[in-house]
Amino acid sequence: MTTGAVLATGALTAVPAQAVTKPTITAKGGYLMNGATGATLFTKSADTKRLTASTTKIMTAKVVLSQSNLNLDTKVTIRKEVSDYIVSKGASSARLIVGDKVTVRQLLYGMMLPSGCDAAMSLADKFGTGTTVKARTANFIGKMNTMAKSLGMTNTHFDSFDGISNGSNYSTPRDLTKLARSAMKSTTFKSVVKTKSYTAKTITKTGATRTMAAWKNTNALLGWNGTLGIKTGSGTEAKYCLVFAATLNGEQVMGAVLTSSSEANRTADVKKLINYGYARI
Image 1 (tube, rainbow, N blue to C red):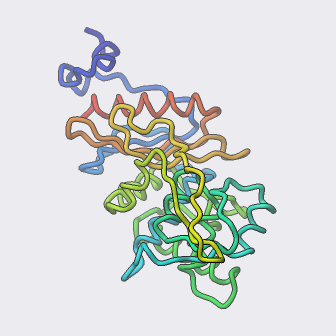
Image 2 (image 1 turned 120 degrees about the vertical axis):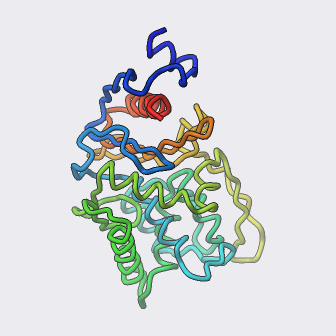
């Protein structure tokens, strides 16, 4: 039986690790690790700095979830500055409405599923320190960089809370995988990123309940071959990115691909890496 046939059938134990052919991926950068041990399974320009697009939001979530005495049910009022930012940047949005009160938990779903930059900014504003929105979001980005250092992300720098780069927002496949491994230790984070659809009920200015249109997860791989998340990213320069985690039969793999030329190629690359990882383990 060929390696390919074995991968297709899922009979992974039949193949000795050394017999598994290393896959070729189209993405410019890629990295894969054993999620349990942290051992490297695959690299392709794994330490080359690249734009991260919305995979940046993994760090936004990580910083929020690392706050001491965090109450996920704390309500955050959506500011006009958030709406103005989304319009000015033409950014992806969870369609949050100015004046609505939204919980921190709901903002995490709004950020990680439809990749809402409005949710990301609201979280950065809430958990940053300062007297203005600009100061608070800048302070929060500082916390993102502090966290990156503490996680050993030596080739990473953030200058935004959502991945819309201001000229110095970059990371590497290896660093983003380190971040993913750390983030997935949070049960809240894990629950959010594996959710395919989420409907939030927010509180309007008048105190009424608003049922938002369902937020759909942008990660089409969810559920495929044990895929549990984590976050897609795309942009004109960043192209297509995905940080992923998958578990099957007790085997955990995590990784990242950056600068894939198309959504279809990104999906194909990640499927190859997940299958390869299972076979290697």
